[in-house]
Each structure stands twice: as structure tokens, then as C-alpha cells.
Length: 188
Image 1 (cartoon, rainbow, N blue to C red):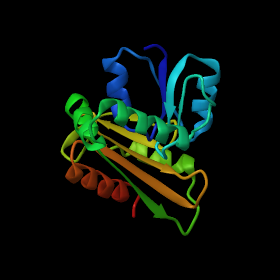
Image 2 (image 1 turned 60 degrees about the vertical axis):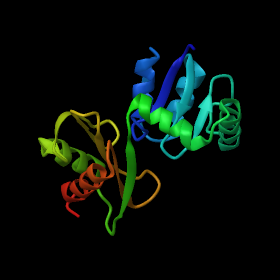
Image 3 (image 1 turned 120 degrees about the vertical axis):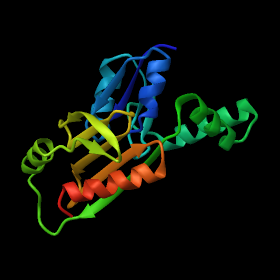
Image 4 (image 1 turned 180 degrees about the vertical axis):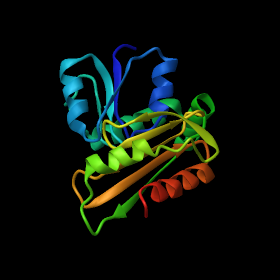
């Protein structure tokens, strides 16, 4: 297997874990398929995907193709000869369990992306859901990386008057706590 993995900042950390296990370079882009498409056109990228389900593979069009991905998934299930639920269980046994959720906060007034980003970075919490915040990224919203590999991302939508709050962790309880804390951090 050769090539890199390209994903958006809001995509699952399972891709990070897989890239590490298989020795693949991982590129992370802002939300939207534009950055992934650019990487697929200009670099050796094996797989590119975003949180909304848009995925493309090397040698195919540099755009998310749900029909092709559905067909490839059917082929994987047929070749494996086991139910999809078993393949997912194997994936989680190999790479660890993850729970991912997104909460949308509808806004009555516009929010300055720059002001929100500055406030969320300046007032970054020391911990979320009992885990230490070890890194803060602010190139597309604000993403808090936690010591256990979990994360919380807060970013304004590029297409609608709302804030999107994303979280991924090893349990549903941790994700719910992180989403609630995200709402508190933005003052809602």
C-alpha cells in the first residue's frame, strides 16, 4: 500500500490511527473537499475523505463519490464473507473504540470567526471530560486535542448561520460531556 491519507480537521481519528499503523503520511485540511481534492491532484494520496461522508480514492475523480464508496463497501463485505457489524467490531478491536457526534448551534446573530477563535484559544480549558488538553489548533475553528487522543472542534459553518461543535472520544459519555462543554465555551 502506498500513498498518503487526506482528511478534514473534523474527520475521525481512526484515520490517524490507521495511517500510523500502516506507515502512511496523514494530511489534515480545513473542512470541505477542496483541500482534499487539491492534495489528490498534486500529491500521491491513496484515500481522501471528509466528515460528511465524501470519500475518494487514488485513480478516481478527486471528489467525494458515495456510490463508488457504497459499492466498494459491498465488495469488502462480500470478499470477507462476514457481516459488516463483524468488520466494524474487528476495526474497533484493532484501532480502539470511538464515538463521534456533532451538534449544530443555530445563531440569531452573526459571529466573527476571528473574535470567536481568539476567545476560544485564549480561554482554552486545561481539561475536557477529565482529560488534559495537550494541543490547540486554530486553522479552521478551534480544535482541542486531549491526552487520550479524543478531541473537540468548534467552528462556524461556512454555509449556514450556525456553529458546529464536533467531538470524538472512546465513549458516548465522554462525547456528550465534551459537546456540553463546547456549548459552554461558546457561551450557549
